[in-house]
Image 1 (tube, rainbow, N blue to C red):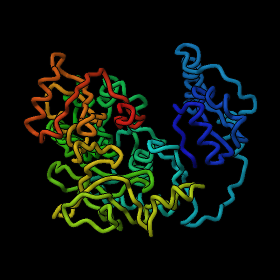
Image 2: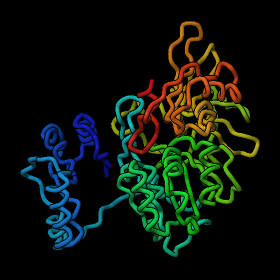
Image 3: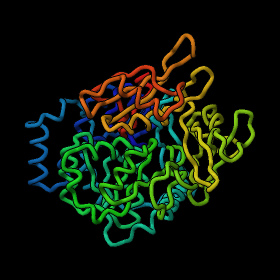
Image 4: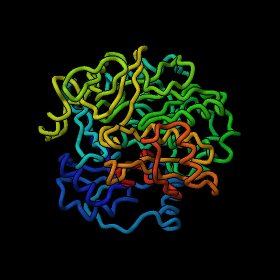
Length: 450
């Protein structure tokens, strides 16, 4: 299985299809034009085409398809003459006999492509054992909060991404639960309206999603009496967001940490943690974590270094990329590229990504810390910190801010930061924007801001 982002450009789609060697593709016709323009340059032999209403029955399905295509004009014209319709494939399949395929735990279940934030997108080889192990790890961590009586998880993250694929789709399948799919979480008013129709019991998301909901009118009026689990991941959960979430919903916002190469879960807050503590929790069952210094030795407790992970969820490697695999997998350990430390209770805290580090006059400045302080100001909706070149200090801190209060100015924000940050960490530049660039999962793209 090769999951594809439907919003890929032609260049991105062509790369992923060629890199994976995919032979067949199931695609919804809204995005078929992109495939049409590059399919002849890929190994694809079979195209299976579907429409939004195809599984909604003869009458309703046809009505939905007509509205989508001709009224809302959501389907650009395309020409894929050899494509087979999805419903026709299902009809053919009913007449066939299932033949089991011999598989073992080391066989690849998914080629899960990384976001490509560090160069070309690479396919992480996730085996059947990797995926089953991570599902068992996830269930062990969250099971005490949930049961088999009909859980419903709000899934506002795309299912082609490893976070929602494992944490929402597959995990809640194993619990007999339901995924409530939010097709456009960027439309926050419609998102909140949809939530009002359901007795949801769990929600996962990234910090920007929780923050966006909290700042949308009507959200605080929802009924949260059934909500048992709120889980943040994908990027650092900020304290002001976590504390306000708990105050509004009455449900703790737990934090987990993972990466595509680990299916994704590596660590998670204990289910009985009393309140937000600013860490990514404890290692998942059967998972080892160590903190490595630049000189190749393990860091003492409390000291920051690169986080390395070992466990049954660690990928086999990158598909057809031996050199890239050798860079990240070292004697069974996966070097995450994240800077972290372990406290005296065994909890881990991410300080930042190696590549996002800002170096001011030789001092390491971590964007997460700056952003959290900026977010403490009540007039700020979102913030991102980056380093910009500076003749005297090498780099200086710049923040990009989305305002809640229109009259909030640069001087006020910098004065606020001086209260909580050492001078060299205080932003020297402030740029106000209407919105910040994000990935499809909702992570703020610092590299674009740089």
